[in-house]
Image (cartoon, rainbow, N blue to C red; front, side, top):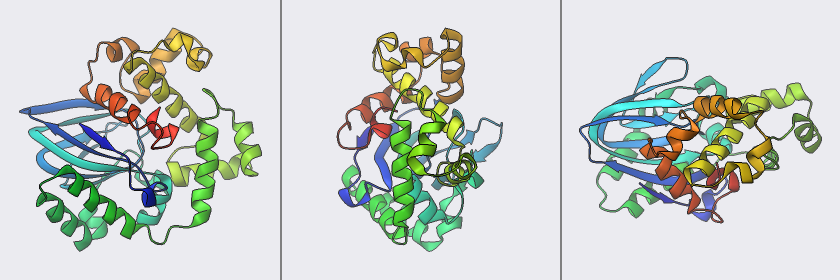
Length: 278
């Protein structure tokens, strides 16, 4: 698996670019809860099983909505996937609707974007290098986000700063930083992130903890130590959002978790901490 930071002009819209190859006959992996994704499936076939039990087939061009918990991905290989993580302003600009309307769903990008997505697939399919594939996906996102509202970016900066301000950020701090009421914040974070603030903070707290464990760090020696009530609480939260227990992460039972921890960690300083550390 290879990761790359987005080009500078897309830092507000793309979290990272990535390419996954797996030379396997069958594929069955747990994907951690994450932000929306644009994916191009160049080889292989599969399906996503979401936390509520809903199953969507993977089309050759995929828009994954934000996920509220871990997702099971199953398929037939060999697998070759190229993708981009979509930050909240990109979602709203590209989709024109609230993120919670696509929570825990996989959508066919060619049904959403028509010929533009079809052309993207064939262009990516015809390339010879990872860098060229990343360039094509970046160009597609750039074109699709030309009408983004600067106010959207400003709001997500406030929320992202809140999510990274502590291991267990309090809603009162977000109210103060944003000048919005709790009800307004719930509506806004559902629109941009797919989840209300409290669930959003739980999600990123669990993902930060999972990344620490995957990188072999001592969670008890970190700021995360006091953010969970006890070991049982940690296990429940990691199981929900990362799909694995701490022991399973330490034993590297998930190829994806190990690769994400390494790949995103290598981007530290080139992307925001919400991307590199969670």
